[in-house]
Structure formats: C-alpha cells, structure tokens
Image 1 (cartoon, rainbow, N blue to C red):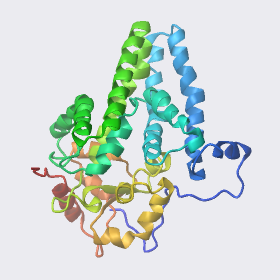
Image 2 (image 1 turned 90 degrees about the vertical axis):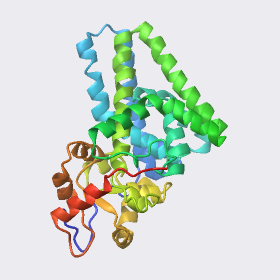
Image 3 (image 1 turned 45 degrees about the horizontal axis):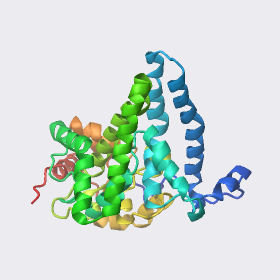
Image 4 (image 1 turned 180 degrees about the vertical axis):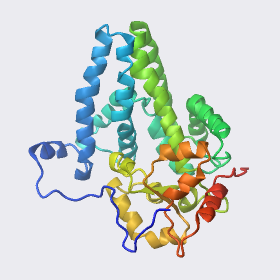
Length: 347
C-alpha cells in the first residue's frame, strides 16, 4: 500500500501565480474569466493549429487509408483526454468572458466533434442530469445496480449508455420539464449524426477516422471513466460523495487532465476550480479519513477500470492510500474494495 507521510506532499498541479506573465499570456487572459485557466487557452490554440489543418488535409488529399488511420491514435493519445476534461471544466465554469461568450460555442460545436464529443450532449448529461442525481437510482449513468468488477455487467452498462443516451436523456429532460436542455441534446445529437452521414458521402475514409472512430473511443473512455469513478460504493450511504466516489492523487493523469482524479472533492463542490482540488483534499484529510474515503495514488481511472475487469484487487490494494491509523493489511484492503463493488439493489 502507498504510505502517506505525516506531512502529506501532493505533487499534482496547484495554482501558483506567475511572477511575470508573457505577452502571449496577457493576450489570452483578455478573453477568459479566470487566469488559472490559461492552460485551456493554450490547448485550444494548439488543437486549432494542429488538429484542424490535419483534418482538412485528410479530406482534400487522397491519402492511403493506412496512413490516414494514424490520425486516430494521434488524436486519442495526444489530445482527446485533455479535451474531454477541458470540456468538463468549462461546462462547470464558462471559460470565456461574457463579452466573448460566443467562443464557448467554438469549444462545444466546432472542436468537440473533432474529439468524439457530439455537441451539447456532455453538458446536458453531466450538468443537467449527473450532478443533479449524483449516481443514485435516477441517474441514467448510475453504476449502483451493476456488479462493478464484472465485465458482463460493464458491457450491459456500456451498450445502454452508448445507444440509449439520446433517447433516455431526452425523455429525462422532458419528464423534468427542462425544455431548453431537451432542445440542446436533440439539436446537438441530430446535427452531429446528420453531419457525419453527409461527410460519409463526400469522403467515407476520412469521416471514419476523423469522426466515427474518435466518437466510439470517446464514448468508451467516458463510460469506463464514470464506471471507475463510481465503482466503490458504500451501500449504506450511496448518496454521500465520500462513499460513492474515489480520489486519485499524485498521478500523471491529474497533471495532464486538470486534477480530474479528485472526484470526491469535485462532487462535494462541483464549481471548485480544478487548481484548488488538491488543496481541498490536503486541508480536509481528517474529514476524508473519518468518512472512510477511498483514495488511490499513482493510478488513473482507465487503469482502475482495467484492473476491475480482471479482478486484480491485489494491484488495486498496492495503490490504495490508507488514511486510517493503524494501517490495514492487504487482505483487509482487498476485502473492503470487493465489498464496495457489489451490486446494490435499486427500487
């Protein structure tokens, strides 16, 4: 197990004001609400200058399919994960100032589809439903009723989410009387699929690699990620973020993806800025301890999903951060983790 020293040292990114901003920093800061989000701006510039020209090239030049196929791993491994978490953060806290708020649509409607995100779906699902229902019975992406170390259970979860999002989320919004969000999900999904269909007629090979495969992988990544984020649930209090989610510390994933591993802190305070999440954990360590929070170090959500699918609780236990004193044995940790992945009957 990972040992936590008396003075907890967090290596994940926290905000530190620069002693001096560059000219590029100052230019970009004119457009955004919070200077701490400068990394988002640099990512957006990078994606626009690299991904957009590449896609144009794929559509206008007759590149052999086996070379065009290289675009998919290039997109997935260098850009997609960061874009998904940028979209996550800017859904909670709009990036651009009111005067430039139309640029928020650039993220959702222009760049989003290039990274597998159909327009508006993420916002409607995550902000309009997931954070409202908090992984309980009414949450369309709730993991509670599934055995969360079962690959068969995950496949059922995956196919329901992958094929049913538009229909279930639309029905949910209609039932709740949230007409604006209903219009956004329907407009975004239909526009995306109509666009892809038209582009398939123009250039099916480019469309496969630019839109279809990234869309499939993006949905897979989000579904596997949500499964891992809400895999270890205390059945006696599933409504409590300390008991229904987990926290990841000191991992490359946090440094790359804007501290997304601090999922308990995020569900406790959804609008807390991503640079403040490590400090929130550090300052409330005793609360995390008293609430029996599950914390892992040096591992990401995708790896947790993989280890659960193979039931490798021994490896999970080695990454487990035991906040309790005295420390529990490996067997005790494994028993705890197994107990937290049992299916929870819902009404």
